[in-house]
Image 1: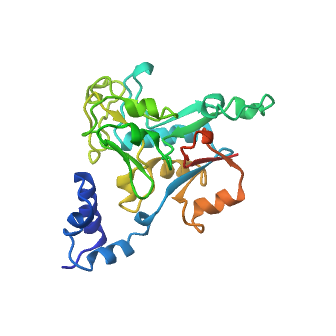
Image 2: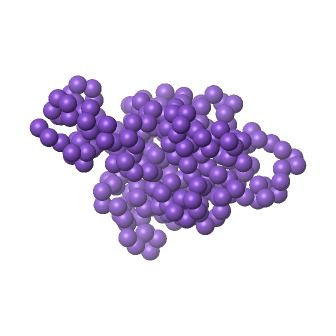
Image 3: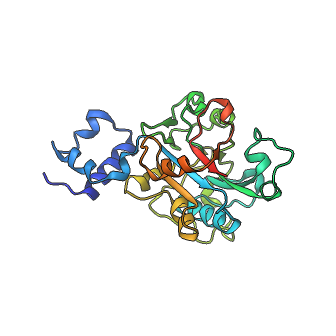
Length: 266
């Protein structure tokens, strides 16, 4: 049975969505099709996805583009209440972003600057260990996923995450104010969710499966090329590894031992 890359990705995405893995998932493909399809999908072969953020290129306009692209693609609504805010990617000040990087004489341009924050997709994610239903788990390629249909809303993962990277739906996102969300949901291909669940950034895993970059990376680099570099941290020849090898970078709370995989190049 001949199978092109698009058909393979469709089946692969379905098996991942349904939680079918190993031999059961591969039985949907004919012998030999797996190897051929994977060979034609290089972006899905990452062993440890990560991101490098060029702080010098990062400005308010670029961050706004990234937030808009992420929330539009993932149907993240604006509920109009800061206390119930849903965010997959957001802006935060230096002091709140890097509390462990204290410097009394830090350059003013950094003290007054906002930084772009998202889930760090940690190497040792404490959120996964805290979840009693395995609604959040770490994939083999390093992405910390979130199954909003399995989530029971206990918020143990939120308490375990030291980065504030998870949001809880206090109300039904589909009933968000129309004046704030005139076109919600914007992306008909991404599922909406019910109230009472936790959600977070997933590195746009469904886009990676299609050979595309995360929505924030695509939007950010369209506005200012090179501001967000995404790739396989385990590949010494990848673009993200090459730029990290040339620039000094910091991470959020690395002293906690979680191994964050978002790097900020200063």
